Structure formats: C-alpha cells, structure tokens
Image 1 (cartoon, rainbow, N blue to C red):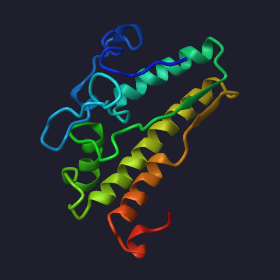
Image 2: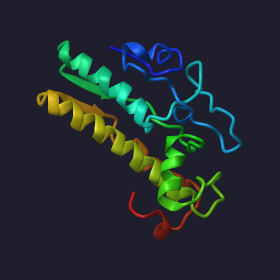
Image 3: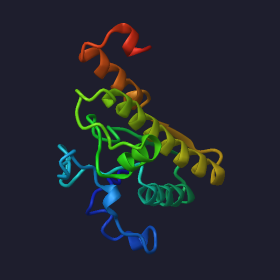
Length: 169
C-alpha cells in the first residue's frame, strides 16, 4: 500500500482527522521563506514533525492495522537533507535554543541543527510506533535505519570537519 502525504492528499483531511487543516507548520521552507519544492513529486516538502501531521499519519496507521496490515515500512528521506525552516521543526529548535534555525552550512550551529532534525525525526517515528503498538502489539514497524542520523555525520565528513568534530560515524 502506498499513500504519499502531499498537499493534494491532505486537502480532504476531514475524512482522516475531523477539523484538521494543513497549517503553515506543515510546509518546509527555505531560510528566505519560499516553499521547498519536492524534487520527485508535485508540491512542497511536508514537515513530518508537525503535531497535526503526526496525528494524520497515526490515524491512517491505526486504520490500516484495523484492516489487517501486519506491519509498516517507511522509506525515502523524511525531511529535506539540508534542513527545514519556517515549520514545526524550526519552531521546536527555537523553543529549545531561543534561536532561529541556522540558515546555511557556514553557520556555527548548522551541524547541530541537522542533528536536532534527526532527533525530531526519531521522536516522530517513536510516537507512531508506540501509539500503533499500543493498539496492535503484533505489528512490525520498520523504516530504513540510519538515514537521518548518518546524514549529519556524513555532512561533517564531506565538509572537512576534523575527526574530533565528526564524532562517531
């Protein structure tokens, strides 16, 4: 089963989450405020860490489990590799650090922002897994492992950071 989350598929959210409407924190933006267009499908990248987006996906996971799905596999990148601004991700960063998200790789905290992004992705998947398993303990819940966590580490390698700055890869 394939169900891509795009602006088009969330346009009729009332069938999935009554009263829900995609908010501005769903859309990933460039630091200048422009929407980040997805390279493989029409529309913008959506921020999976948005609370309402999480609920829409969870509603769908529970629906599929109730119909007999025995597991879920998530693949592909879950947020743009370079970051995501003007969305729930940057709002969470701002709440934790008091700063706007670093806007490019020359910013001293840019790699920390990428690590934070990976952590938020992990938290989102843990939320889905834990909630889905509470209702169906036998579900298999998997995704391509390591992509978010390794992405920041590899960026450090490619950007020429020293071994001490890179941490373990």
